[in-house]
Amino acid sequence: MWKKKQTEEPKNKDITRESYLQTVFRRFRRHHLAAVSLVILVSLGGAALLAPVIAPYDPDAIVGSFSGAPNLQFWLGTDQIGRDVFSRLLFAMRISLLVGVMATLISTVIGVVLGLIAGYFGGVADMIIMRFTDMVMSFPYILLVLVAASIFKPGLWNIILILGFVDWPGIARLVRGNVLSLRETNFIKGNIVAGMPLRHILFSEILPNTAAPILVYATSVLALSMLDEAALSFLGMGVQPPTASLGNMLNGAQSLTVLTKQPWLWIPPGLLIVVLVIAINFIGDALRDALDPNSRN
Image (cartoon, rainbow, N blue to C red; front, side, top):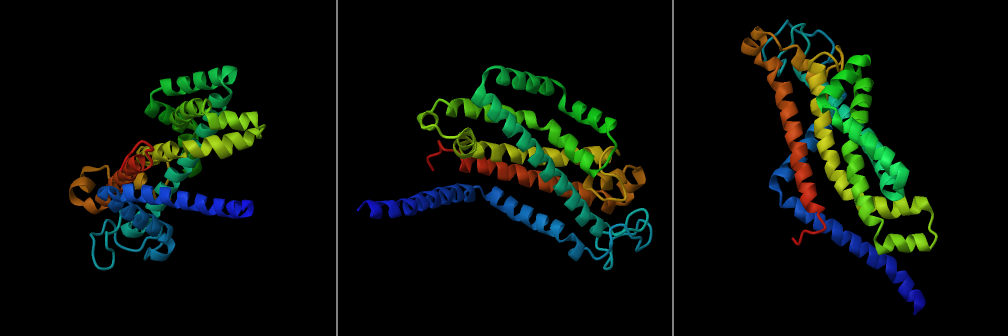
């Protein structure tokens, strides 16, 4: 009898987990804009990953006339030095998504680690971490990014590191707040009394219960990081030519002639930035509702 009960427990646990995932999926599907946004984001992300296969030309190769209009050979025309805009757009989207994802991962790891330490241990560690967090957040965000970008040499990985090390304070405060409330719950106190290792309590008990708000917040960091990369590259402080990014593609469209007579040079990258950021924000809003434990639907 005891053996039978023991073998049935994991099965019941799997059913509970499956039901929770089904509930989250059902709540997410109710947000039609988010569902459409997810399809768009997956499609664009897939196109970016397969850019070397999909792109008809080398993004850095001169293959046509200068500032050629769109035609059957060059779907989105050519830029000022004869490079295929469509090919560059695919590789630019790849770079912009890479910056967004990597910067989000860095800031999330830093924020989660500092938030866990501050929330669980409290005391001096909490005071030092939170005062440092407050100090970072007291600076205007865009000013902090611009100063850091001007100090370090412009480039892909420098921009990723700058954005990753600037975006963590919000996640740290979020995680700390969740840990402070979880630390007082009976199941955490029970683990402490039972003598469970600290890493088990932090990473197997507390962290999984803060994963939902972290995931939701990370979507906003992803969108913000992509916008920041575009802004810095547009100003010449981000990803440097000839490497294509959505920001530095817009950088080449600053003249009045380009704005009025060559819209194929600035509308595609500008529109792509807008679509990507809006899609990520819609997905984040839907995840917030789908993962809300207080939702009754």
